[in-house]
Length: 189
Image (cartoon, rainbow, N blue to C red):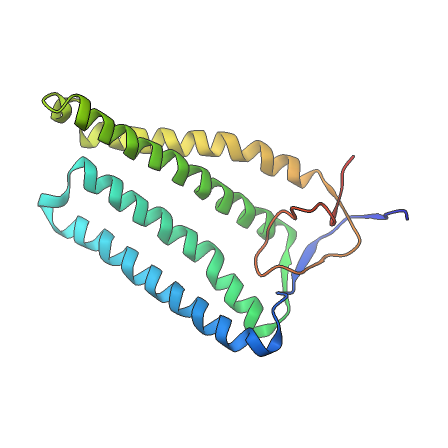
């Protein structure tokens, strides 16, 4: 069976959820979104408003909350829109952008958790030198470098994904834009 390769200008997200479960899933996802949004905003606002919390460890926690906040705002609103309207066209560029942002945030989260582990290692192994070694400046520098490394890892993958030719259809059974893991929508050259 031969696949025909097509050039696609938009994807149609069609969330494959059983109709009898859709209301419950929308309610649960909405609750998760509101809880995640409010919880992360509260963490960020408390750290910003209390000057005693503006230390390296709380900067790590605030950055973790910010990453989570951006992640939930990148994925969940589109997911809810697709589930509510059951059909949602997304321009090709916007879909690729969402894949890039979500992948970058995953890489950034991994690197950020690694930085937090290194921070704890320094605190345990060099407790007397910790305040001199780990400052707000070094934490901020580590966060910026993590962002750059995450982007350097994800940008080539996103560029390569734009070079793929799509076969079959532009209707995806997903609730968000994602690179299809089973390869059924891509024709690899």
